[in-house]
Amino acid sequence: MFAGITTGTRRQTRPAGPETTASRPPLVRELLLVTALFLVYKFGRQLANGHEARAFDNADRVWSWERALHLPGEGSVQHLLLHGDTLVKAANTFYATVHFPATVAFLVYLYLRRPGHYLWSRRVLAGLTAAALVLHITVPLAPPRMLTTAGLVDTAQVYGPSVYAATPDNDAMANQFAAMPSLHFGWALMVAIGLIMATRSRWRWLWLLHPALTLLVVVGTANHYWLDAIVATALLGAVLYFVPAPKRPTRLPTASKAGRQASVPQQTPVPEPALASQQAPAPQLSEAVR
Image 1 (cartoon, rainbow, N blue to C red):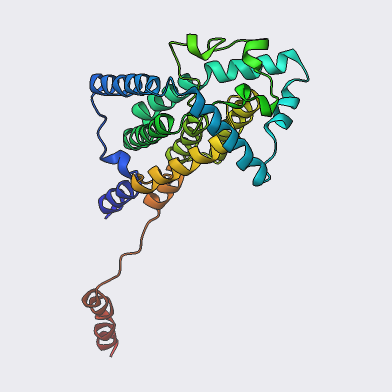
Image 2 (image 1 turned 180 degrees about the vertical axis):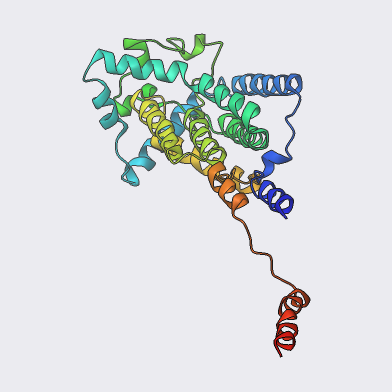
C-alpha cells in the first residue's frame, strides 16, 4: 500500500513541460550557427551603405509621420539626459556596451538551464534579425541625430563613448543608415519575453524594465525614432506568432506537502466475509449459556 502511495507521489512531483524531453543541442554547432548569423547580419548591413539620399528622404517622412501621429518628440527624452554629463555618458555607455552582451548572456543562460526555451528564443531572434535586415536594405533611414529638422544632439560624438565614426562615409564597421527597425529595442524586448516565459519567479515581470530602459536610451541618444521601436515590436510579434513557444515550467509541490501526503495512513476497507466471521461467535455464546 505504502509503495503505491510513494510511487504516485513521485510521479506527481516530476516537472512538466518541454524541459523534461528537450535535449541540449551540441555546443560547437550552436556556437558556429550563432557566429554565422552574426556575420551574415553584419555583412548584410553593409549592403545598405551608399544610399544616403534615400536615407535622409525616408528620415524626413518618418519625422513627419510621427508628428502627424502626435507621438512625443524625441527631444523631450534627450532633454532629460542632457541635465548632466554623467547621465548622458551613462546612456551612451549603455547603448554601446549592453546590447550584445545582454543578448549573449540571455542565450547562454537558456542553453544551460532551459534548452527548450533556448531553441525557441534562438529561432525567434534569428527570424527577427532576418526581417530587420530586409528593412535595413530596402528602407535605409538616417537616425534622428543626423536629421537637421529634428534639432537633436549626437550625444555619443559630443559626450562619448561612441560606437560610430564621426562621418558615415568613413564608418567601415557599421551602417549608420539602418535605423529602422531598432534591433537594440527588439532584442531587448525578446530577452525580457524569453526570461518571463522560462522562469517561475513572481518577480519575472521586472525583466520588462530592460526594454523600457533600452527604449529611453536609444531615443534619448538620438539613435532611433519612436517608430523604429514600434516597427521592431510589430516584427517581433509576427515572428512570435509563427514560431511556436514552449510551455512555461511548472512550479513543483513542496517536499513537506508531498511528505505529508505520503505519510497519511489510509483506512483499508474490511471485506464483508471478515465482518461475518467476527459476528459469528455471538450465536455460539448464547447456545452455551442456554
